[in-house]
Length: 515
Image (cartoon, rainbow, N blue to C red; front, side, top):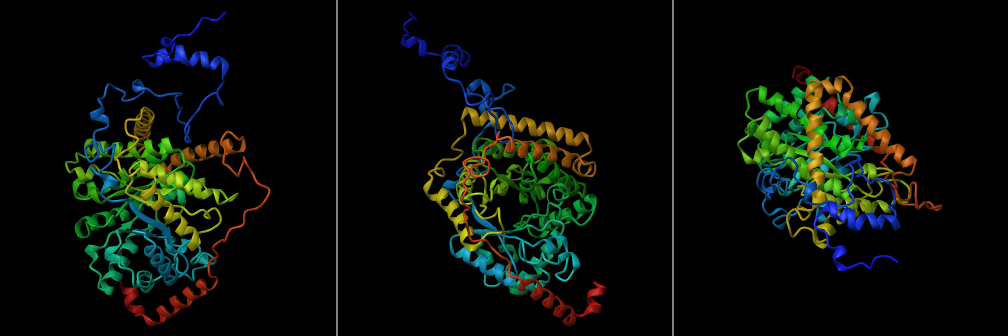
């Protein structure tokens, strides 16, 4: 006859006692679904977290967490966050000609968008004219084609630029050129440039191992990107001259830790270059942002964003001697991770994007762009882009997560994961530094090897069903789900070529050659 249990048997005062008195007997009768649980990136997940799992190395809660708006900014970069103002809601969009892209931007602004990102086609990003042989078939396909200052003027026609909270662009290898075209177009249109909030990605280093739109060797590219940073610091302090980009690194297959580590290592290369020119970190770093992914693993993503702020604050203070609190505040633009979206049962992607949006909001980011459910097929239709925007608006107004700052702060699980990611990122940064820094890691193939291994592990997990993607390798449907798919206007390329040829005939070729 078994011993009769009393209420005292359920009383425990520590994790060890709980393991012995509560967990062990339970596991004798009920097993768990798998031998071990991890985050999407492979970080081990404890069965339950307790206070002893957080705040390692004897640090106090005040030292590690602080409060919103105070160093180390783990909990947010302002005291009130979304209680004062929602994040910038700005979709990544653009296609075809400047007129077509302009029409899409104005439509989204009319529907409540507060910023937007100019998606450039591949020829533009790589510096090719519309009539270049390598541009054939790509003009206006994955973004808008900008081949001249006239195109830039058409792109922003009738858009209230001084009232848009943020206008971003994917210009990297062409960062200095796009910056110059913005300035020239705005001056010609009579726009007060100091009242605009332009956001130039200008992070070419990640292109060499994660995306591919590079032109010059890495060392020279760092100098060009740094030229933009230096110019804006002196002349356009309202602009963002660099968005250290981790999104593309994550979409290439990285883990959350690698995303932060490689992003910050690249960022340090630009910062070091500008500092070597005699500029103090406090004179230009407050303008810099980071561009990160928002994945679907909510706990890991929230911890990632919190760790990113803490890491940046420490780097600015400890490595560069920053004194200005604005330098230490990491401003984050998050884009829901397109790599998580699948072509099978595409409407399921609406749910995925909603979860990723929630993770970004709980992580305290400043700008969000939401992927559209049809992006596994092509760039978004206008309807799909509208649904993606409405997703942000629903989270902002209906989900109840914007009334308190850092709503998950203090959760044992979140704090433990934040600690783990922070430590792992610093370990990576030390390794990258020992290898010679970001440029050397690109040249020696370190980044590429790391990402290839991580991407292989991820794909292998899908193929072995260790990682479930609903509709792809589980809960599959025999019936194909048909959705409208965007198709680029086949006449766009020819029209752009004709415009370019007309421009060449009209302009002063001698003056062009001279300058």
